[in-house]
Amino acid sequence: MFDAMHADPVLFQESNLWSTPIRDLGLTLEGTRLEPILAEFEEELRRIGLTRVRPRFYLSTEWGVPFETVAVAIPFYLARPDLTALHAERVGHVEGFDRADILRYLRHEMGHVLNYAYRLYDQEEWVKQFGSITQPYGEEYRPEPFSRRYVRHLPGWYAQKHPDEDWAETFAVWMTPGLDWRAEYGGWPVAAAKLAYCERTVAALRELEPLVTDTELDEDVGEIEYSLDHYYRNDVSVLGELPPGLDGALQAIFDDLGGTEGMSLDEPLRPAADLISRLEPELMANVFRWTGHFPERTRVLLRYLAERAAQLHQGYVATRETSAIVALTTLVTGLAMNHVQRGSYLP
Image (spheres, one colour):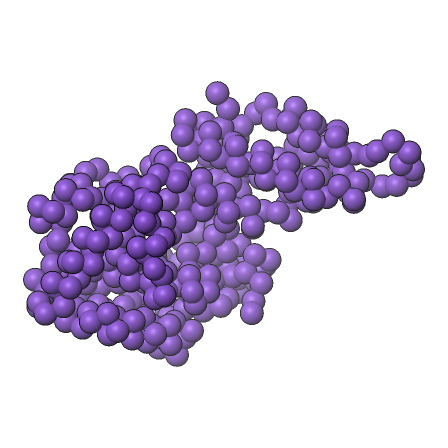
């Protein structure tokens, strides 16, 4: 398996791949690792009796289902390992990093397919359970972690983003093979009611022909004129604010971990900056999952902390590395929660 987090984008920059229009990269679903995963997903649909809706899968710039269609867009960078590695390096987060994760996204997108195919969003009970689909849809949202009104499926408490996403996440949980949603959400009455509605709705749809069968594609990979260079031009390093005023927090962490009484003065300290950099991939993923703080923002935050730690010459003794990891994780999680809830890292 390729090491997505340590791929070298220079290899792309030195070749014409970097400047070639994406449409000319020859990307297809056929013959890729995606093909058997899609076959597995279609078997899942057959097992739950959803055979009258036939989604069309295609490669595009991101996951999604264009409104009023049954076409499921899959990110083009998942079609080739080298492109997946490049995306991980440039963005820091891959939505569909392995088979299980790709299936997780497919179940979510299938929820959108059903919603549009049968126009569920127009039904009174759907609106009562999830809200109006006409609510404003923005990329920014402030989730309430661990709210028992919503299911947990995709990272970042994604069901809380919009009623359409709430339904798609609910359907995905209901569809997940081997998941006992009644037991999982037995103590979450609102989320459980949504799941029960989902089960009743799917049962009613199994024998109905869809109202919408349009498979019009949005940004099909075969028509994307711009290059990888253009696609990644907006460097994620410029996203988000850099939170000044954290030097004291870093010093408080590493002053406590820099040595113990009786320790040899010649024993070298490990650089705190190196540890922060090493923790970056895992912290990005887990902070997003449990706080909703976007991975690209967490990366900006971590690189800022690493830079400041280096400038302040912060370090720790090898025997205290576990304590350093716990302290850094707690600090970053606390800052992320502040940003999610207040819009800034510090008051």
